[in-house]
Length: 452
Image (cartoon, one colour):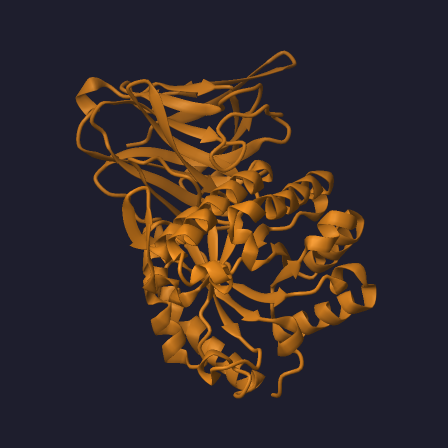
């Protein structure tokens, strides 16, 4: 059943909006949100521009009658980013609102309410269908909001900037309905490249070489080593990002050191993330698309006999990093070895495989699935892809080109032509799993010099 329809009223020079119920049982109330009809051909028919203003929370809320406070319910809507990429769906129980957050830029689920199952699906044309499933017992109202970032419902808003498109919010019984087939569109697949030096940012000739290489190889995302640029040269970083984005290549700001997993070193990487956040605020026209951490905790000596202690500190760091990157709506990407699913980690009395803790903490995973055959790459990623799918997260599958032992983990011996053929095969098989986001190659220096 539709929650509401919208009508726009203008009086003198002032802008007003009135919400008209589609049925007498419904009474959607705006809280620091204005609306305007934006078009008739959204994924659910007519769609509206929602504009946040003032400070605090910005949402539409619907009081739920007592007779409807039981059973399984699904709250859903179609959203499109037009200035403020984070939105949320929420439920109120006993005076407390649980919210699940959705990133309309990256198409991923962020923090979620403990009683929600949250899902997001790309519909095409920049639209996403977002939904939460929940037990309706004692739920007194539902909420559809514009957020300041992941986990941040409260912010000071400017209606000229902080706005999204909305279409067809619904409250229904049972499980979430599938998105309409007529609106289906292809998912944006990443073809990434790890770039472990800052020279392409700081040197124009090196930048041109990297850009030419990526265009020739059909790669569309650069994971760039950004430590020196964010510390010392924001202007050159902005020029690098503008140049690459103008050619259809996204840029993720990457930072990596194994020892950062330990609490005594957290301040080092968090300081870099803070500087990346400051850069993003200063250069909004040259935004990176993510903060990307390559912290291989298994490489430090404490991992061998204090694995649980190290892993818990690393998971704590992920939470802090994600909170800071959300300040400017940047997703947090974590590099993770494919074999971390073989270790169980106890955290707050709960034992789970390490890959599950990491997937839950991140916005997206770059899975270091370092194998050199199609079957091994697909099969070894299975547990991670299935779990990510259940949590509404996405995974990019990475392969290795460095000449390191054992031979089975790298394409060094097989050459680039074989690797590219295998990646095409893998790419053709994995999209059946809705958590698969594409592939990536580690790394630029060895990929460009490896034999065909």
